[in-house]
Length: 221
Image (cartoon, rainbow, N blue to C red; front, side):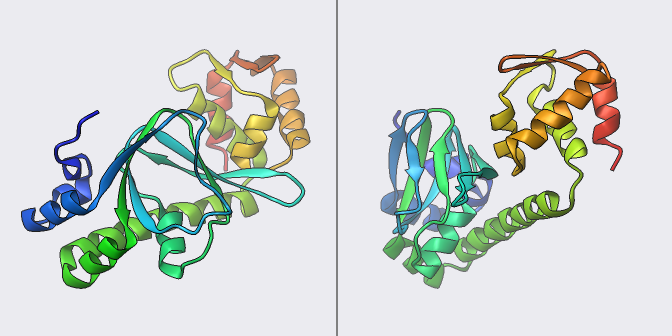
């Protein structure tokens, strides 16, 4: 894929003055990764800022006991709050980013980032505005895990995964990782949904029988 001006892809960079965009295009490089590749991991100290030009990346954290929680997803047109934070602090990632699809990533080396941040107010404002928005999203995840009802959160997730569909392809462990809880908890709630005739379960597949009923649970908080 040949990209002539990657700054057009992102709302924030597209709004920057043209001279700043030209500096970004000269300083950054474009790379491609395959579905399933590790984009970053706990052993890496980021030396660059990256922007996701195309594809989707899942950012998750795994406890010492092996429980995984999905923190957020980076969609095309986004930057990564964790990369920004770790790069500024010069610390290793405490999470892992996995490409959920083939991805195209724009990489801006830290020296170029530092120069642009110090010399260009527009670029600095863009980076930290994006950082703030994503940090707020991350805090919502923490709030949901700490205080949200699991039946409500699971119903919301099923509806999101099954948007426009009659079924959801996901294992109990997949859903547990998405919601930051144990597989046994997900199994218990799904079994309750099935007893209430809201869903039907088979291996790796959840079929909606009463989507309105699931929606009522999702909005009952």
